[in-house]
Length: 157
Image (cartoon, rainbow, N blue to C red; front, side):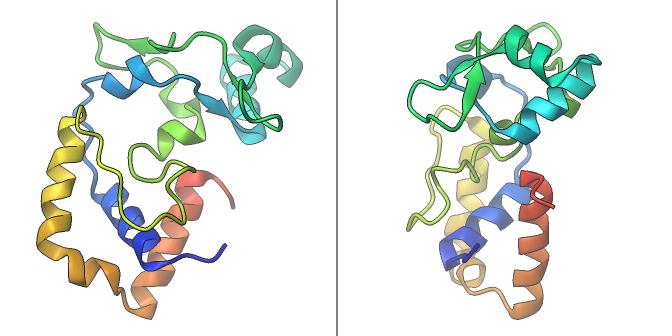
């Protein structure tokens, strides 16, 4: 995967991101994309087969023929408002792991999308404004570190 300067900026911003567990993203995301690795994680988490996980928790994705989506979103059925957290945090989908700065739709775009309804996203934006020049031009060592962090977040490796 070829990364551009804004991708490195997004990775660093995501690494620095401090979720405040407000649950806004969990309440408005629709659809919540599910990749094959997500299905395997869900099946393992619930100790069921992948086929059972697909039947119980997914629907065909409304716009991506090669993906599935959670059945119940907006709000996500796994967000616990009382606890302010995800009931399946260890098995949460890749798009949740990479939110808000590394959603698949942002990779390769020039710029960074800031979610105005996310208080932690706003805090991250303040750092971007201060350190933009440094963040856009990471040295080779930092690039490697960021690429490794991206692979881990996206569960590519």
